[in-house]
Length: 87
Image (tube, rainbow, N blue to C red; front, side, top):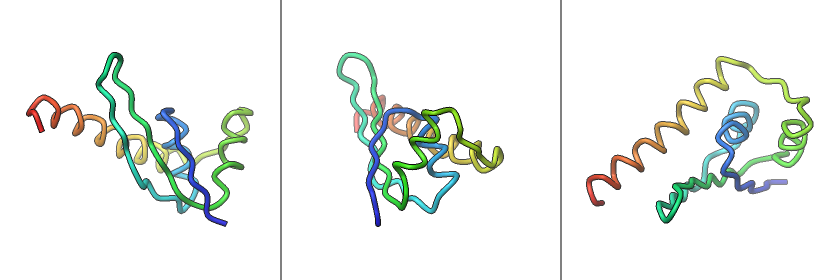
């Protein structure tokens, strides 16, 4: 069954995207006060992956994890760039 997980944890988001067929569905960026980013991810068994992450039992393909973290960071940097351009 498909689930949606929302998190501001870059590492959790990267882990879930690297270890499942989940898709990034939405990114919300708030620049009010402290900058915050909220990732919405949709896929199968996301809660189970999150549980293993928080229990410090998560295993990941390091190369895939790095690629997904870079993907999420690119989104963050693009959001900052767009903000500076006033868009």
